[in-house]
Structure formats: structure tokens, C-alpha cells
Image 1: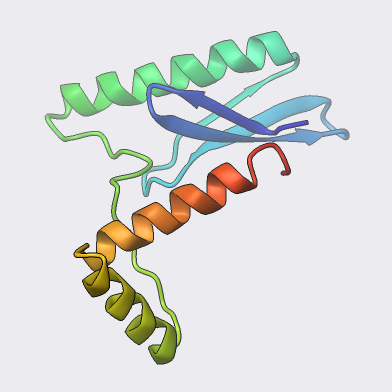
Image 2: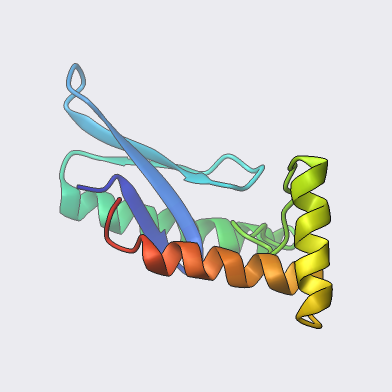
Length: 116
């Protein structure tokens, strides 16, 4: 079971209000607030897509660049010893530290695919 929707690179997270009998959600990982709601799963998917399209169109009308959920960069805080070992291993393999971390993440995600 998943409460995540994806459309045009945007990620929406959904919750259900039993009290109101409505699904509601918002686009995650952007600073702007973009929400959507519906009373059925089918309508929810339509509303999510419409909200993404509306967000992109509104940004265009306002002449601003729409934010993207992920830019491909992030900061990771790790123990200094692990940082040192990773840098050493990257150098031994003639890789950048970024490339080593990317390969390690890919390996971890592939190894655990379908377990979540």
C-alpha cells in the first residue's frame, strides 16, 4: 500500500480523513504549498495531476521557475572516520567522492528493492 503519487517529476503525499471522508494531499519536497483533495481514489489522482499542471501554469504566468521535487544534490552528515574511509576508497578506485556515494546508494537501493 502506498500513499505516494508521482506526476511530471512531482511527488504527492496523500492522507485520508475518516471524519470528513476525504482524501487530501500536498506536493512534497518543494517550498510552495500545492494541495489537492477528493472523495475517491480516481478523483484524487485526477486532482493531483490537475494541481501539478495548475502549479506549472501559474508559475509560467507569474514568470517564475517552478520548483522541482529533487534537484539531484543533497548534503549528508557522516562520522569523520567514515568520510575519511570513503574518500580513501574513492581515491583508490580513481573516483570522485560523489561518484562513490552515488554507486553505494544505487547498490543499496537495488539490494533492497521490493523490501519496503
